[in-house]
View 1 (cartoon, one colour):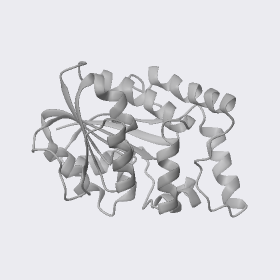
View 2 (tube, helix red, strand yellow):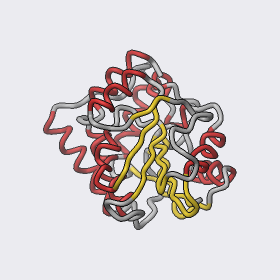
View 3 (cartoon, rainbow, N blue to C red):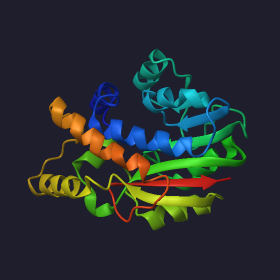
View 4 (spheres, rainbow, N blue to C red):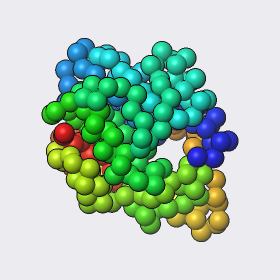
Length: 239
């Protein structure tokens, strides 16, 4: 990941519409997997801790992150963030977690299956894996380059990778679907004009809030009904 992007990420991941909308979907998904209060949740690649901060009501939370700036931001938010890197490091005892989250992490790694096997090792028998990744190689742009992505996924590709790591797949859906036509048009337009910058530019707040609400509408859909297309893919697996 471009070091200059890290500071932008830490600044925007509690404000930008994409993070706010995605968080609403993730909280709804986790709510359907574990009861509040008694679960153990591990996020591998926790960034600045915005997701674990929101998931704290579900129980004990631990994050692992490689970047010291993001670790500091997560700890400042009260998150138990520990330093480590996939695919080798595991910040908890094997079998500790009821839920392991890999949220927009696999696309950064040379060996995604090895990382998924590490996630499996962290889970108790019957524990759940929650994965999100960016969708469709044809949406590749300068944004992916700045973020250090290795690939984007289709739904079948993500299912195959998770299966090779030893998980059974409970459900898998595209999401960020309502805004997908506009997102795809922007990506393709940026490619045509040679724009190699990242996409994390927050629009004026009225528009930012509207986009966040549109994305968050999917929180009532994705946990129950698989969507046929979208800018990202979400998978729930079981050990």
